[in-house]
Structures are given as C-alpha cells and as structure tokens.
Amino acid sequence: MTDTAPTALNLPMVDPLPEATQKYFDICQDKLGMIPNVLRAYAFDIEKLNVFTAMYNDLMLANSGLTKLEREMIAVVVSSINKCFYCLTAHGAAVRELSGDPKLGEMLVMNWRVADLNHRQRAMLAFAEKMTVESSKIAEYDRESLRDAGFSDRDIWDIANVAGFFNMTNRVASATDMRPNDEYHAQAR
Image (tube, rainbow, N blue to C red):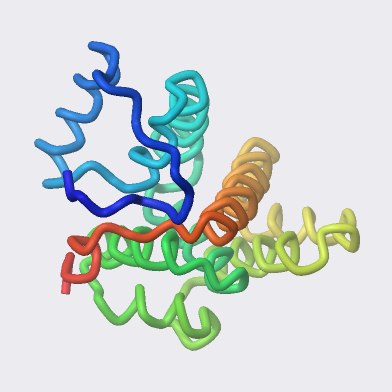
C-alpha cells in the first residue's frame, strides 16, 4: 500500500482490518500488484466496503451475456462523459489489458465513436451514453435498438446496471478527489 491517502477526505482505514478484509486485500495485492485505491477509500467502514465490493463483483465479474471487456467499455464511456479521472485511469487500463489494444482504451476515453467497434458494441455504448446524459429520455425504441443488436432483456438489465453503477461511483470519486493508483497508468501499454 502507498502512504498517500486515496481521497481528499480524512477517513483512515480500519486498523487492523478484519481477517476477511485483509485476505481480500492480500488477493488484490497478489493478483493486481496493488490494492486499488477505491477499496482503500471504502475501508474506513467495512460494511460499506463489503456492499461496494459485492455490487462491483456482481456487475463486473458475475455471469452475464456481456463480456468482461464490454462491461469495462461501458465503465470507460460513462466515466469519459462524467470526466472521472479515477475510473478513466483504472478502467481504461482494464480495457487495454482485456482487448490487447492500447489504442482502444484511449479512443473510448476520448471519443468512443472513433473506435473500430461492431454494431453490438456501438448500440451498447450509445445506450450507456444516453443513460448517462439524458436517462429520462430513454424510451422503448432505445431498448429495441439493443434487442436488434442481439442483446437479451437480461443483457439490457446488465448494461443499465453497469452504466448506473459507474454514474454513481464517478460522482463519489469526483466529490472525494479519489486518486487512481500510479500502477494503472503504465498497465497494458
């Protein structure tokens, strides 16, 4: 762990961490080479951390008709619209790693429309964008566009939930000046 606080707020991590939390952090350190600052930020309240990680893990890692890359693409596009430095850095790295294409991560950060995407991905990202910018204007034809692109109603649920989750986390990260781990900047380049 770095000595730098993960946010501008003075909310120190619980010390010592409960055994289960420490084990989770050790797994992160082993698999990622770091403990993501978002987890460190939530670790001032273990119940909040557990709720956050349960929701994140369900949306981003559980079985879905969306690939892990597609979910990360949604995270980056939503975060780009919201200008969330933390999520653009962390999830941009994930897109680079999962796609094997460092340019894709950069394109999604700057303007997802310039990326070489298939029809399915374009429909998914257009929906995530509309949800982020003007969710009250989503109508049945928006969902029908997703169905026409091959998404099931369950997939549409997942798209909406991933986009909704990142709209929330982007706002929390921005409001608390959450900083991405330095390690993210060099990953998969």
